[in-house]
Image (cartoon, rainbow, N blue to C red; front, top):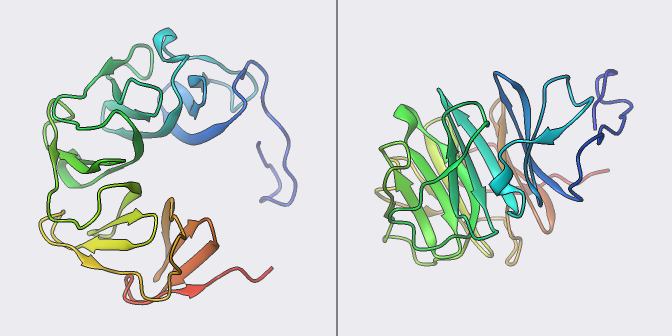
Length: 219
């Protein structure tokens, strides 16, 4: 959907988009990329028309797309694991060396293009543009829904718990005070001094970098 009225009204923009579900959007130099349950699609005219971006990804459920520098990363659940494009989405290459799972639920990119991936077998990181991956072993659970880097703090969410790290994954602490069990947080964002987390039970906000959370579901 697109809005030209500051989100007051929305218009559907699906021409050429044969997928039934869109999970992620990301800008690139060629236009707008969409991660879908049928691979990656691209629009060069603001969503007016879409076309497939990389034919061998059409059967893969893409969970998230992130761009950093000249590289674009796409996490999938459809068997390809993590994919990478160095030509603005024209072609894609699998980059799974060291990943213990091909189910990628989330991606975030930190300083110096260090990449973190949330998978159903743990959080993995790469500091060489995805050429190889290492699993982070100092977390008490392995199935992660999401991971996000916000203002020098790394957040990772499992089905029941949020963890945070202030040193790029070397050490972690629980940051779930106020978050109900089974919330399944799948998205984080920061606006001003507030961090927002969204999942199965709605939206929660924190004004103290995840020390405590409150429901933000009014309306």
